[in-house]
Image (cartoon, rainbow, N blue to C red):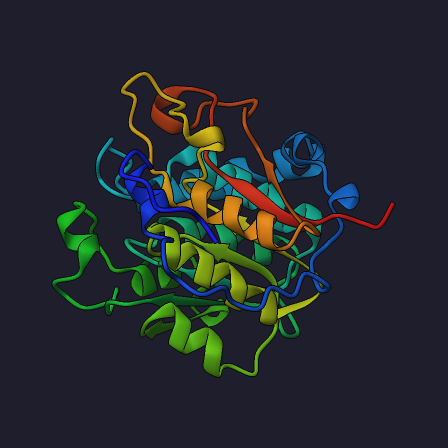
Length: 270
């Protein structure tokens, strides 16, 4: 149990008084089998990226503040899906649909057949005419952008809370990308539920995980919820660990090489 204190960060205070949830790490890919540096250095992914990168850039408003995941992080997603061979992907938090384009093009490059596909869940109807994509200055909604790339068959969208979807689905996934609510308790709950919908050897990917709750860009902005949620998770279940990508070999957040992407993995017994 975390101790209440008026000096604690707001993100940490969100966890106060909340009961713990079951944390089942067995399906997680072992940390020893994941090397974030090798993932982003993968030469085959690097060679396959330029064409989808250009196609996505033509559809997404990458102006700072538009709200989509930045181009450097999109490339990291593309590398990750390909190098881990993830075929069934759950995305929590569609928003304007920037990241789903990278995920879908990665699946396409792997063949995009069989059970390959993405389930994208958002509390809002992201494809509605007045959804966030329009305010972000994009010409089309996420579903239509996928269709423009010939990838609509690879994705399905659900407008509902993340916990309701993960609690009710019988589907299982190789990769769960958590980019929904960044409040500490919501991330704690999302990770606990994501552990239950993983296939054996699956991986959870976090966005806006700021290691040590420290900013990574000159503007000093930082979201603390994911970090503090994982601090509690790792305290309650030491078999779980976090592998931040840290520094990418290309520009990412605000033009720096730094990313807030991080993988959740499993410690193997000594």
